[in-house]
Length: 180
Image (tube, rainbow, N blue to C red):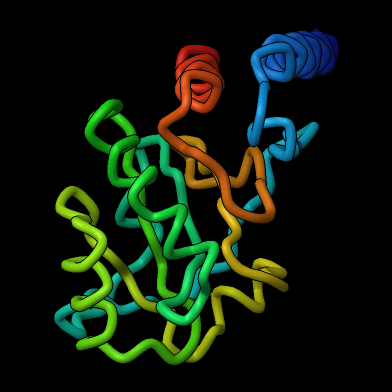
């Protein structure tokens, strides 16, 4: 009986995930058409990061919340164009964590200057100075954005830049948050 219930629960969960994915997929317009929804959430590697103050940080610090994890660099032109939309997304959806991670060698002074020049006021950046997290998550180009569920698993990925504060992006994220 216990095994039968486990199989039934698994089937219902997979069906619910498929229905949620179909509903979210229908909301994708514009840049969000590039968003790839995973059939099943993917576990993340446990890799240490650094704050802007050089303190240790971890993605596990954000468990319990939906996270828009954005890999970027100060030298990346599309990243520089995209970052203000991530800042506006944070303002529009305060229940969501928008978390930019500077991948590779990014000078602290340069990161702060970029945030100041771009008017980024709502985001707190983390750093992956060795690129260990980027490599472990197969980040092969920037920008790259990953959506994490409250359990800290990857549920979707978008390669390239996007207008993250667009109506479509907000609708997709709200649907994910409501269904998960």
